[in-house]
Amino acid sequence: MKFFNRTNVIVLSLVAIGSITMGVGAADAYMENSKTMESVEQRRQQRNEYLEVFSRYWEVRHKIIRYKIEGVDVSSAKAMRKEIKEALYQQRDLNRARALIAETDALLDKLKLEAPELVTKGPDREVEPPVAVPKKDDVATKPTPKQKVPVKPVLIKKPVTEPVAPTTPTKPAPQTPPKEPTQPSPVVQPPSSGITVSGVVSAINAQRRANGLQEVSVNNLLNQAAYDKSKHMSDNRYFAHTAPDGTPDWFFVKQVGYRYSAAGANLATGSFGTSQGLVDAWMNSPGHRQNILADFGVEVGVGFYNGYYTMFITKPL
Image 1 (cartoon, rainbow, N blue to C red):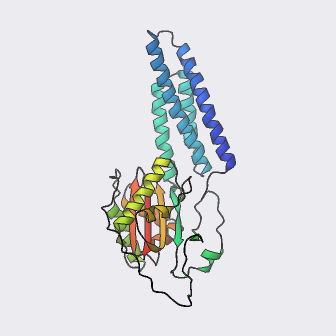
Image 2: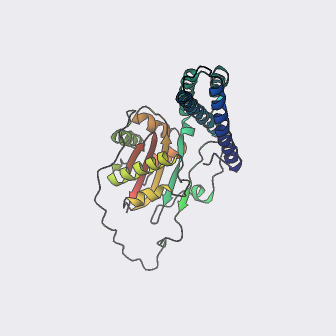
Image 3: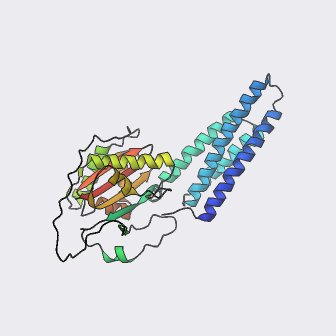
């Protein structure tokens, strides 16, 4: 799901450029009004402090605009933004401005968390032959994006540049799957919110048992791929199944040497408190629920980094 169109990008770019110019001008005005400076060094330090706080103010303002575009109700955060502006421009109170900025930033995270269908990214799925025939409406109908709500996932066929086995070969040739690489120990960022890989997998299997499905087993290669995807989103500041440079979810799975015939991916970002809380957020979204309860599921991998969470569920070759 894309929240930003070309117009939104232009608007945000102009806001960023304006913030730099206004920040420097406001900092200079702040220095001119400080008549009791003892030295040039003190004036320089105070100017730098003001620019730092002003930069944080514009980061929060940009975040408000971004969340509003995504459909989050940010009216309460906008009211606090006016108080920050008053503290910076009129009162010249840096300490109060810092406190208001931190409070507004925390409020924005809370507002987004309260809308899990917006916090958790829509699922993605890739299918390679041989696979079970999917439902007709999943393949034939291209989902129409609804207003800023994750859409129903679609099955994405592999590009024709990669070899695809025919559905009904005239002379079937035996295929010997390559030996799976040695599974390394999973590289997982230590969680700070009580969410663990084993906890997420346990919650997933509980949902599968309750729906009459077989449990999935943990694969360390998939854990590594999920961690790499989460870190990539954090490092490059995006939240999507396809990175801004075009890198898809499946790149990270193939990069660790894992081979599969079907796979699904769930993404999430924010603070969910516990492993069960994360899985519950996914289960409350029809598309994510479909991946967790996928009938092809045999193995699963989970990884997270700096508030970004990734789950891969697959049928290995």
